Image 1: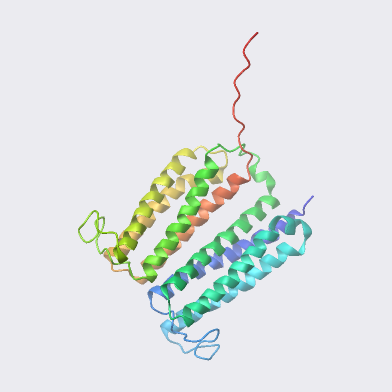
Image 2: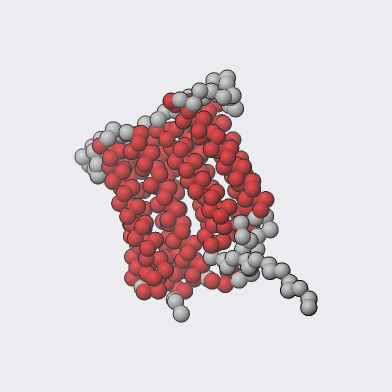
Length: 311
């Protein structure tokens, strides 16, 4: 039988790396909204030094890079622990390799962000890959945890037929909405509509330029809210307690996310509200993904067959 201890070690490392990756995403938002992305004009050093001058913008960018380094060290420890033993390698080897590839892609995009002078497409790609890496680390943590404690799903029973596709769709849509929000920020479209729920006093403005980008972000948020309410209603009596909790929590988190977005607009995109906005988006992604993975690990319910007619 596979060693539960090995899977438990991988899970703990992946959880720690996921938490640090979450912090990196939030700090990256602060770097972006404070205009600190070019405070260190060189890479990997900062102003040619390992320890840069003690100025706020410079320290924010330097701290962002330091967090990225720590994420990398923990990620390599996680991947190494997963790959060193045959039982963990057979189950988690592909995810471990993917996480390493995404990390190097993320590091390259981080360097290009500086070299390309904050090109919006590069910065948006940096966020998109960062969220994918975060999702991969969460997947490793949950998968390893389920392998270490397979009995945690025994009481859940078979899943309903529509639960898995609903949660999977919600997870993908959350990632798309977060990336779209990053595009709004990097293209300076956050205040293209300085009011809400209208845009420049119009319910249906012309969908072009920055206004079109901002409205796409808003309408996708409304779609995500509708999907989460369907998820919450359909999965409110799911057999797995974690899935039930996610079903109750997700609509509330999306409502909170929309409220934070509205406050963001009315207050003129303050730094800390913007960081909270992205942090909550990453939390929604994690909760939805965890529920999806736990559902995927459950057996599907068998369709009921009609009774044979009496002779």
